[in-house]
Image 1 (cartoon, rainbow over the protein chains, first blue to last red):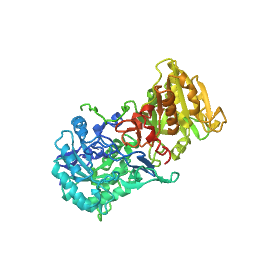
Image 2 (cartoon, chains in turn purple, red; image 1 turned 60 degrees about the horizontal axis):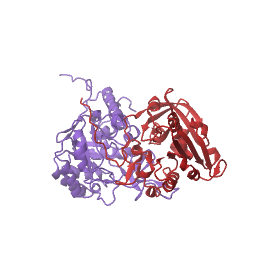
Image 3 (cartoon, rainbow over the protein chains, first blue to last red; image 1 turned 60 degrees about the vertical axis):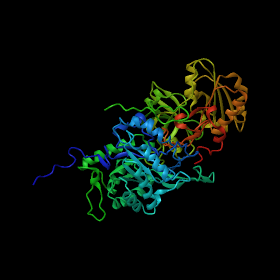
Image 4 (cartoon, rainbow over the protein chains, first blue to last red; image 1 turned 90 degrees about the vertical axis):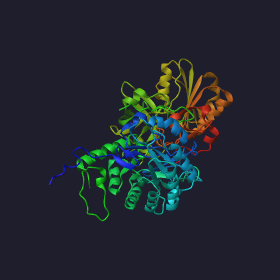
Length: 324
Length: 290
């Protein structure tokens, strides 16, 4: 019998196949709304080594966003109510995508809309545009008044995905909302409707109140999307439940600040992760996470990070380096 | 690997600063100097910022290594010593984050990201620069005064605070200035606000730079618009800021013209007063209200 060479001697395999030809060179991406369109940070975070860039949520027409105040710090997190400020899909097609063509990192455009028609039209405008690696469907932006929240209900989510699936041949990742009554059921519904992968989670609806002003800190309704380390346990639970529900790739998001956080998501069932709010604190946070994950995999002799995956009901596994 | 084409960028109503000079790193605290009640100046070993910073630009300082408080805090670059490789920031306690920073000890290491943003126009030669500071708004003026003095500008300093103990010590500006002072309780200088000092000096200056609470800046802008329209006035504003580097889109501020909002971290923090929509800005809660 041939003894297999110890895994990891040549380094772990980091690439992740999402589907429809989309392959992430490594599993550490940057989350929508935290990295603009990839140009903004320049040398503060060289994009060449990222696994994926998920762009700012993009709509059919330019949107100026919500009036201020738009952000507020909370315990181990922050709230935002940006209101989908973005230049519109035509600018993305004509000005940004040509630059992305030469980038080694896939750029996945996050698509938002107020109704099914807008989702489908934005997705259609992106179809076949060189430089665009895929679509991440934002079926649940908590910060836009009047927009339907497709992400909360499995049937609504499926109808949105089906419309978009018909409008584009691009790889389609659906971003799930933690506000759904049963996120696993939404995941199943969007997978059945043609999603190539899911990402979880979007921000958690929250509010910060100023006692001094006797009103919410954020403008408008006063609610916003909570992100940052505070939501990591919510995100891990969602990833574990979604992992158990679907066979397609799961991209974990929520409160990842360092490599250990990211590795926890692989244990919970993620195939890849996105670093979000931490980029606001450390512009190159995603690259630090990548380096830390690579080092851990090497030390632990993992062939791939998904080897960390926990099986509910399965035997307890040993501690890796730095475990405990 | 082919070089990455970064052309394009995100359209903004006011040309954004570039982040090309910004660096992120840890800076050792070299000196902690108390400057009045609830204020300290931290002298940080940070050669990159010391070399690159221009007057009115800012740095994002990390308050804690862990997640509480999570976000960095913005501080104007107060003073630089390129030879020594040090940068001074003026920290006034306005909340939990600034309280922690103000308690920094010698030898502590603080994460510094900068320099960021767009600063003041530095006088190109002789002429009079009027610098108007209210409260913690003195922070950017030592660096601007040094730059103006080096170019032969005459410097006039208007400083206002609630009480004498909270006035910024004029000797800390580090350049010769003609100083005018106002305190709200009359404990030094004229009783009243710094803006009360302004009308008498408008005829003698070629340019104004102002920094302080947004309502004070609005008053300065009103006075200049009414009595000396056309006199260049630049204001250093404040807004709740998430990242300081243009990606969170949190620090949007009302400006004149479409699309009516600009990111303070990239288009500012210093803006021409004529670009600001003072009416809408006046309806917003103070930046530190949270």
